[in-house]
Length: 289
Image (tube, rainbow, N blue to C red):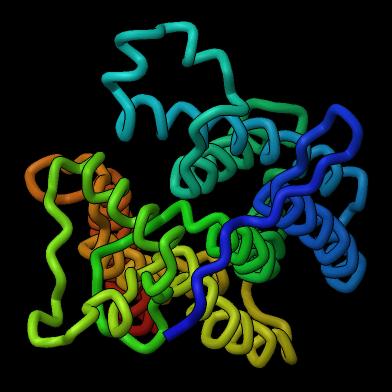
């Protein structure tokens, strides 16, 4: 099993910098640099890309916060309504994705990008092309912070709870969920020595870095239609994210599913409907030839 290491924290004068924050900043910088390269490669207007990125970033920040407090922490919001305005607290990756998509669509349909709407799928597809790498960097930050803990396990890629710090951390997670931490290895002399906890941020980083990013690099060797990556990413990512969320301990659930799982279900159904409809239209066009 992997050794548990607490999140690195750096003190720069009065400023406390967490490793997670550094990872998020690196993800944003990588995304902007990669997007500029891809825009140049596809002969897309860089000024449009810059404005689009601003809309996506702002909408993504608000979406990440709103989705988190509305669906994951409604009790905190009822106790402190001003939490809704503190966008730097409580964020959700799914909310950020939804907010970013909403911001992009608004930019091209009601914002200043309306005159470029004819090529909106080229711009959006370009962003989707580089998004998994940025998300992977951010998820590595999640792994450093251990902010998506899962159930206790003997899985080799889990983080060991051998140390007092690790055991105290996962015990606190279980206590927050109102569940007693019970060893999964009852016949071991020291159960904590052969146990760990699933870290869903770590698993997601591995899946992104070892599967999706290499696939996107491979597919990127030739030009693809604008919507290709917009379809490929959810088809690859959503089923894995849906399954991983069953390992969560403390997340709120609605009818047995986490908010992210409900979004994944709705998105997959919607995507399936779109693909079936496009396939049906394609077959109809061929019959008319």
